[in-house]
Length: 116
Image (tube, rainbow, N blue to C red; front, side, top):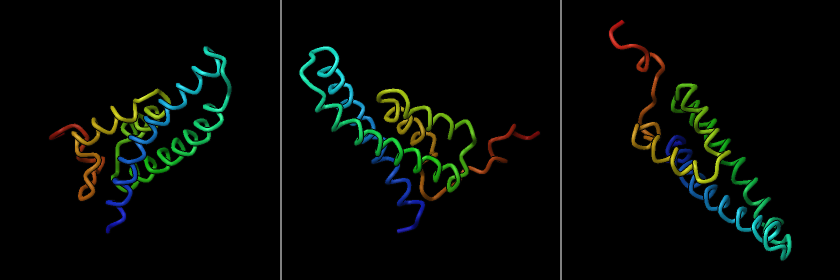
C-alpha cells in the first residue's frame, strides 16, 4: 500500500477517534467537576485523548507535506483538533475538496489566481 494511502487512512481514523476521545474526556470532566464522583474518567480519557491528539497532529503534518496542502488547510486541520468534534467537520470538508485523495496532490501553483 502506498505511503500516501496509509497516511490518509490513518488521518481519517484518527479524526474520528480524536472526536470520540473528546466526548469521553468531556464525560469524564462532567463526573469530576459537576457530579463530583471521582477522577477516574479524566485519568483514563485524558491520556488517551492526548495520544490521539498528537497522532492526529502528526498525520496532518504528514499530509501537509505529502499532499502539498496550502498552509491555510494545514492550519485548519491543526486548529480543528483544539475544538471538540471539529476534526470530524474538517475531515468531511477536506474529503469533499479532495485534500484527502491519496492519488493526488494539490500543488500551490494550482491554487493561485486562475489565468494571472
